Image 1 (cartoon, rainbow, N blue to C red):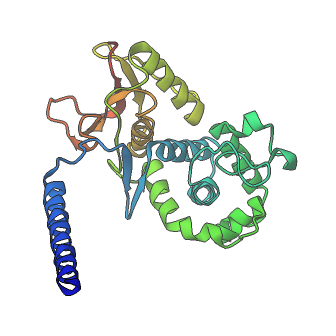
Image 2: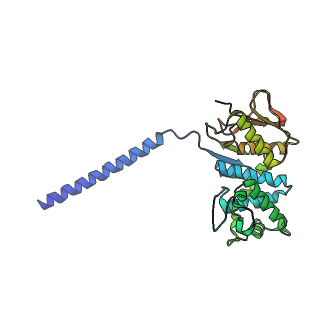
Image 3: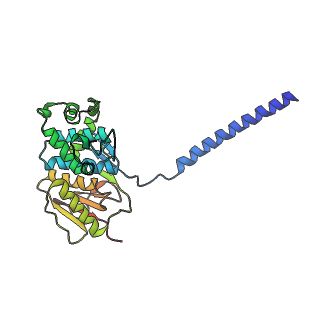
Length: 287
């Protein structure tokens, strides 16, 4: 009787294992047939390399690059700044950190970087970083990590170097040295629409790049920015896509390419509106 009971138990365990395995295989087959999300929020930068960022990281990277350009800092300074922000905050505007560290560069009020409110402003933080970097003698000839360390005085002085390649890719794209290099997929329900979105976009553009002579296109809600050169145009175009998610941007066009929020990527313009002297951004209409 005891032998028969053991046999029955063993058989039951075996059947259960087979059933579980069948469920596992079935679940794999079902998962494989489920539709995948069609609009994952994120950004891809491709400029002699590839970097993937979330929308907040992308917007912050674009602002850091623009502030460097506004301050007339060389390209290498932007690479150093981005590598520093990568290491210190992963390009996210942190509310806190080690001791009293705050923001993109984890600057400390107690060390004279500014008030907590000031440091939480990405533009203020980037300006303070570039000002400190400019005071470092010979920083242009230093490795990325050595230049960053002169400013940050980190306990991990070699940590910034691992972000130098990603920062170089971002810098090439954001300074306009690549065409259609920043692509972002944003949500279909923007927080800002219509005139409010256009106003916010214009304000942000002017704060990051300096006072620009933007105009409001008659046929759409948005803005147009004059491009003195192809490089300058792509700087503005990539910035606009980088900030699309928080400013309700629906479409950006320059030269013979356009980015749309629906597709999340750049494609050739086919409606005859190609323009190499104006960067045009359209925001979502009201409603």
